[in-house]
Length: 290
Image (tube, rainbow, N blue to C red; front, side, top):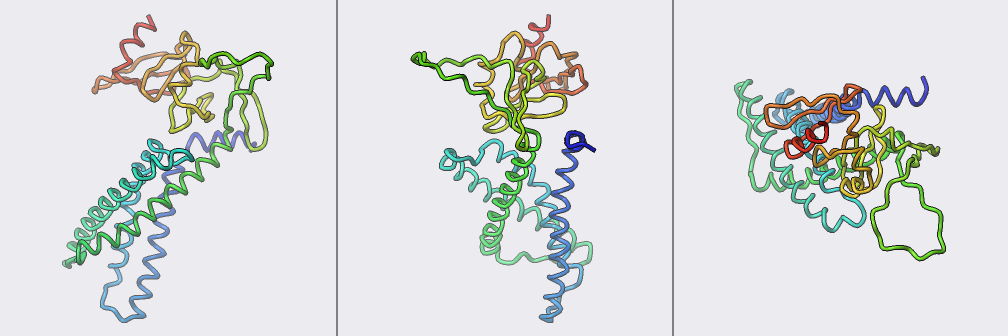
């Protein structure tokens, strides 16, 4: 199987692969910690049942599985990149503490429920002291999740290829006043040490993702460092239309508008894919399609 086919297979099942990887990492860690904790308990001669360490470890792992999507969304909303650290790092510290509180409250509830099924009582201990102890661990876990997610996304982006606007040829004439220049007909994509050109007229839709926009073409996403607003200003307004605060879509590819009960809609494109459309842009889109 060629590299592109492996990539296509992975991208088709990417969501489930990512969820499976987090589940494998967390649940595998819970199993290992359960075994070692039981060994330590037996070695120390403490009076705990065999099932208790499993309840402690798996309740924590389950809560992390629930919280990870919110952590990743926070990473997209407040990206930790050079130049943004001073502005976004305090926000992440606050969110890490909120995450820790949600983690503790959720796992304590699960533990109490599990103990109740065994006619036993779970005691979390001194709440202020234990909350501070758990916060120290959880802030480190939060940072570790961001580190893993960042490394993984960097690898996937390099695998897919990162787009960039080819640099213009140098000119001896003085530079004009800065205005948003139109994008060239092709973008340069660097992929695992190779370079190729991405025709602009093959881009189907564009999605905002932190400091990047993802250029979607034939089930592939090519990240380009730009804000969605700046990228939109450089596009041909007759070709693309804003349908959501995070999405631009090529107008001629829209096949149907599928309203939802909330008043928003999904746009079905010619290849069968769907893109969200918020009610803010819906009426303007209908006028463009007429």
